[in-house]
Length: 357
Image (tube, rainbow, N blue to C red; front, side):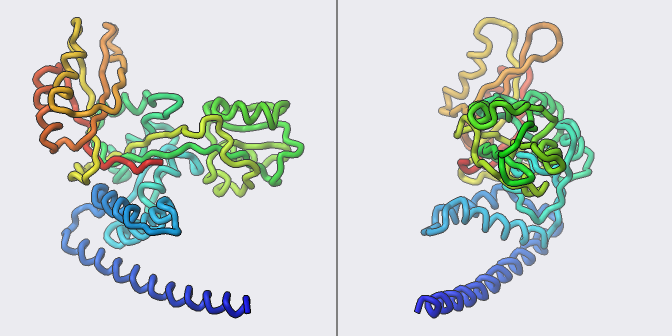
């Protein structure tokens, strides 16, 4: 009886799969029609994609998780977008890093990706037109801001058009699928710091060897016996390793935020953020005066970060993240007043806020 029940259920699944295939292709055909009507306009619309993913998450009755539903629809969107245009995106490589994971989370897998050796190369790729978009890390909840990204945002002509927030999960991975006999561990220095307690408990005598990236750690572990690598699951997949211990990070709420750079100025999506950088005159109370327009118009700040101007006068740039789109009445009014007060101001972009990781 159980075998008959399973066979019946599988036939029902097969019928549903046929329906899904038909529906997905109907959606793709509509996407093609929209692409034709755009007359060459860019296919990637971050605000539209954010609206879709939020809607399906809100309408999801289960049993699939919200993250599972989002992953399915993200790939459907990616495949449909590719019918309009195959886009190319630069990211901080090599393959198998958290940056690649962020890239796939934002764009799906139906794209062309370009791994770059440095953040400078990531910016250069999108600025020269080698790629249409770029993904760069901007801050980590445990380690703070990525200073080089902030410095490059000052001069780039590109805008922030989206953000991605990843929960950072580290995994121990080996070629043989076991920790027995491990005498050396490869990883990035930050990953060692973030997994210190697990390493002390499980591999107290193993040599810790810092390398340039978690992907490089996985690459080395794939070619050596008695070696363990620490990094994201995607690194194990890329280099054929087995995960022997998952989620070994000391801080379970550790997250990294990435930005997407491009030419777009996304329209409001209903849940947006705005990033800007400004300078303050070198006098008492200057920073307080610059923040007053936000309080006056009820605009919330989610982040304030200072960076030295590097002109030898102990002066600083201030990077600010706001809640709301630059076209929102309150944000627009605050920015207008701020422009009259700040010696320098640059709006880096308004974009859909990332879903909670």
